[in-house]
Amino acid sequence: MNSMYKQIAMIWHKKPEEFVKAIRMRKIDWRKGRTIERLEHPTRIDRARRLGYKAKQGFIVVRVKVRRGGQQKRHLIAGRRPKRKGINKLTVNKSIQRIAEERAAKKYSTLEVLNSYYVGEDGKSKFYEIIMVDTHHPVISSDPKYRWLLDDANKGRVFRGLTSAGKKGRGLRWKGKGAERMRPSRKANIRRERRIQYKVVP
Image (cartoon, rainbow, N blue to C red):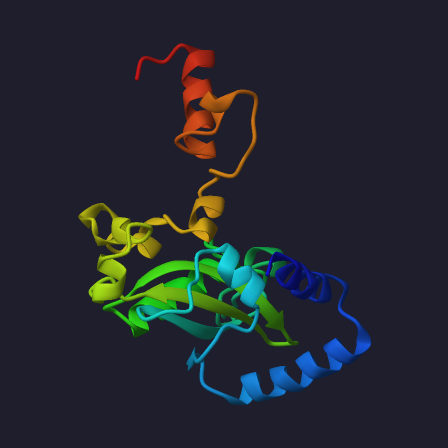
């Protein structure tokens, strides 16, 4: 089984011509489809299994379409230099993957987001598949590997940056000098170092 998943991962990594053509035709259908669409099975089974997906009751896979690039504002009438108008290249602090996870969580409010992964993009949109878990299902509640999702501390975990993409956006994937520089976040450690540098009492 492991060799099968390795072969699937290598196909996604190397992307031969036949594979690229097939994915291109899929993206045309994805673009015409709904923004949030429930799937029968994941597109990238190797990546989904690595992130915790199991082919059993209680697990749901959703594909989300999110816009690419920065945001835009209305053109300002008042006099300003183009540099100061702030119309183009406006980006939010959250990654597009986190935005996709939150939209899926709002659509399926009774489910919890486990993780997500990238499946493709075109000129306008990016596509992510979200792994969601029904915590009220008896199969999930009786499974010791996923029983931790029933705790109150994990409710709404996607909105608090507790998924893999959320932890990356919070700076918890940053590798600094020593484990103390990795927690609780990159920004918190920068503030702490400044307090020590200028001898500010917290």
